[in-house]
Length: 147
Image (cartoon, rainbow, N blue to C red; front, side, top):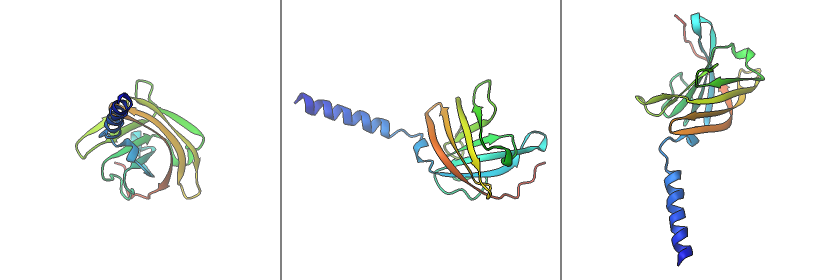
């Protein structure tokens, strides 16, 4: 009887943890695109999304990572996100109106392919969860003009 009760309690705990509404574990698609940096300099946006990314603002939920560097110079480098020592930015867009900045973390780019796709990893903490995963982001061309 004790074992059955313990198993029942354990299942409730597992279900409660598994039903977390932050949905960071559902971000199975990735894209990278050029964007505007400070003073209209080069920058990239890496998007980790719950559905394929075709545009600069995918359907939430998604994480947007911003690095003020040229796409071609990212390989073999890492950046700190969040906090006072941030070298890059990261935001979690839960819904169309609910967005939060990363508390801390790191993004690394291992390679930049000839097709401008990138491979890397993220370990980023937000107030309601953490995303820690490797990614392969395909390049999405944009017609974005920087002001």
